[in-house]
Image (cartoon, rainbow, N blue to C red; front, side, top):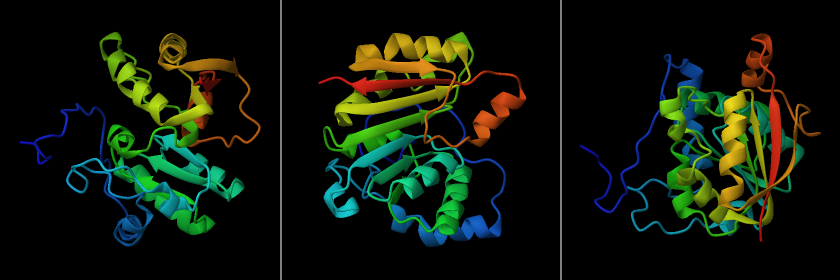
Length: 232
């Protein structure tokens, strides 16, 4: 039985929330750092009225960026270090990845990050309209079987709320090594209110290679980078 409030929508979640046992240091990161890095009350039990997050209080008026599914956190910390005048929220339900990110945050000493360790759809519920100036979807779960394509992020269930929270003219970056994911991205993202600006095999100038990209290259797959702009 679900422990969400009765007004919470039913949302299927696919994928892992936890993998191998965490190291003692990672358990300590979760216990000591995660609450301090929360963007605010996101989960339904903490915010059943879905009151919007106070991003002014969180980041002091800085532009806000969002990374959906940050994996081990390499790119998220890299962008936070390069852009101290930006506040960045990362959303990731896989707790092992969250623990890896927290260790990287400690090592880098960055203070302009917030972390939601859960479903990004819950975060979308409480982000104000037009508040995100840049969003990243980097090597998302490919769900390669045709019957599972509806589980991909590039579907209306995810793209429509993403479009709502992004400001007019905001940039949405997508990186994947799966040709069929590229196909679906082309089909779905423009219909949600985005224009394609650029695509190809060359990463962005401020890119840092992630473990998922390195795995793709080792296994002979070709990365693809797409840049979209929110209409309006």
